[in-house]
Image (cartoon, rainbow, N blue to C red; front, side, top):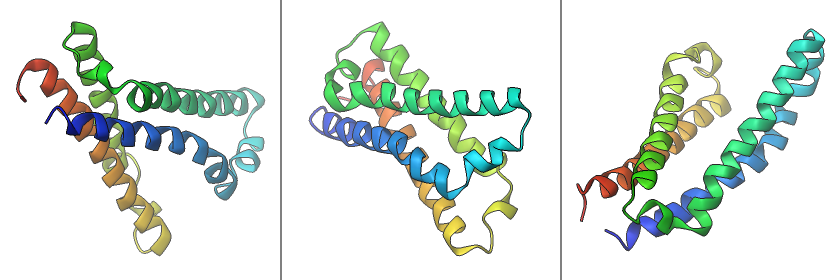
Length: 142
């Protein structure tokens, strides 16, 4: 198991960085700039800052996973905290995918339905990978 997790972490890290980069074409497709321009100046600024920090967070999660996966596997309290906190973050994101976004946003729409299920799979992957790191830290996996 200890040989597999670093490979999964590297794939995951690359995927998180890719997801950050993909926010540019996603934002264009969803016309974020045009939509945000209709908001008050304060809300427009908050929207752009939050979108920027989401991308920064994705890169900050992705880099150690991609470049130093051993950080999640060397037994330490910091690694256990990091693993479980990242797992919790992605668990909340998975919850939002199903219980915050209304099904009217995707149901009956081919591309949106595909993306809804694709991202459900991505969030599950992230939960599984980081929970495996947490389980490794807890000594539940050997």
